[in-house]
Image (tube, rainbow, N blue to C red; front, side, top):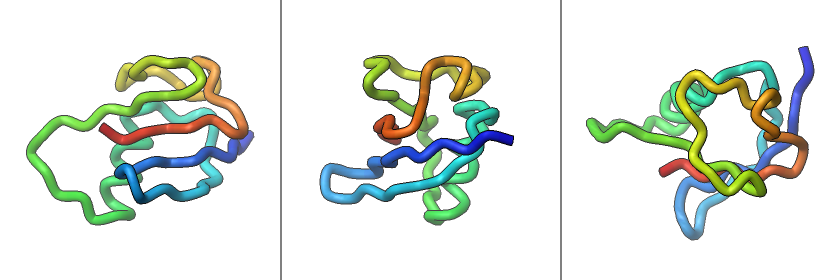
Length: 76
């Protein structure tokens, strides 16, 4: 399994450097983030990827969509 290093932005002032599996979907990453950071909300969360400049679909595999080492992922 290949891993990628990303910067995860949770808020304007909070970001984390993470090593994550590249072969997971955006939906799986959202679940992992929500669990790890104890984020409880009824709102549906999405991920915005940079430099792609777009929101990732829940079923899109990160590495196949161009998320690579150094990418910025923002939880919205």
